[in-house]
Structure formats: C-alpha cells, structure tokens
Length: 171
Image 1 (cartoon, rainbow, N blue to C red):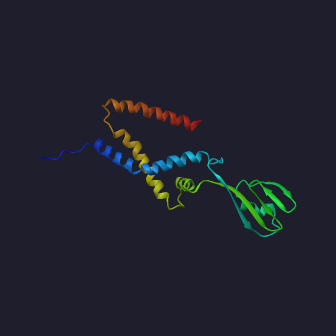
Image 2: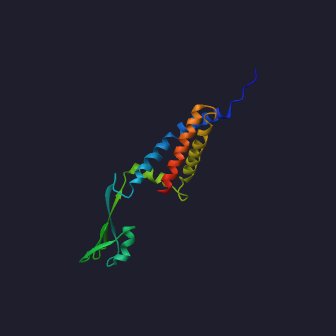
Image 3: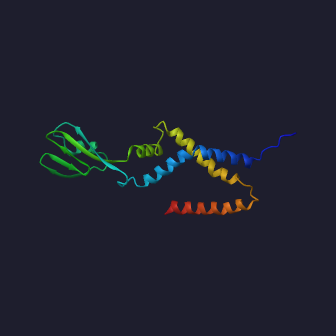
C-alpha cells in the first residue's frame, strides 16, 4: 500500500496548532505586559519605594540630579535641604532620599521580558517569539484552500485588519 502524501496546508495546520499550544504561556505574558506597559507613565499598579543613599556633603542640585534619575526637577530649597519632584537631598548630612514607583516583582519581570534588547540574554527568546508570530500570520493563509468559503471570508477579515492597522499607524 502506497503512503499518501500529506497536503502542505494540512502540515501547516498541524504546526500552527502545536506551536500555538507551545507558545500560549509566553503569548499570555506578552499580552498582559503589553497592556500594563500602556500605563507605564502612570502609577497604575505601582507602589512607592523610598531609598536613602549617603552622598558627599555640600553637593549642588546639579551634582545630585543623576541620583534622582530622569526628569528630576528642583522644586525648592529650604535651608540645607534641596527638594526634587521625586525626593530630597540634605546638604549637611549628605543623605539623599529618592522616591520611585515600582511594579510588583512579577509584573516588573514580565515588563523586562517584553522590553528585552540585544544587551539582554532574553533577546533570543524575543527573536524566536517574533518569528513564531510571523509564522502564525503567514500560516493562517494556508489553513484552508482558496476554494473554501471560510478562506474567502477570512480574506475579508484580513483586509479589515490591514485597514485598521493602517488607520492606527497614521492617527
């Protein structure tokens, strides 16, 4: 009995299905962290963390600004204390008190995974995940033959998605 050749579209469907199951956890993490990152300029889900550092005494506001990170602005100076928008520096004692908002540990780790770049050992995972998502996009067009009604209906949805994407890119 001769072995029948499996159609390419059927092979793509199998790979699509099992790769989808395999990547379901990481897709959940990326989806959730992506939603949370939308609120990164707010204090949503963040808690205030205050750290104190002992610096040299009698430093100027410009010398201690790097300790207070980006967007640090001097609000006022009363006596020996310089008030920044995110903390204080006492010129007499050299104590800098820095306030910052942080996500809970697990959400912070998820966000770091989402934002990994070439300086991170996780960037290979991001490349793999990105290539897998590209496979999902392309394999969706080989799930069904072009003669089937579900394929034709799918093309309408694909066109709608492309139009929506173009609108979102240019607004």
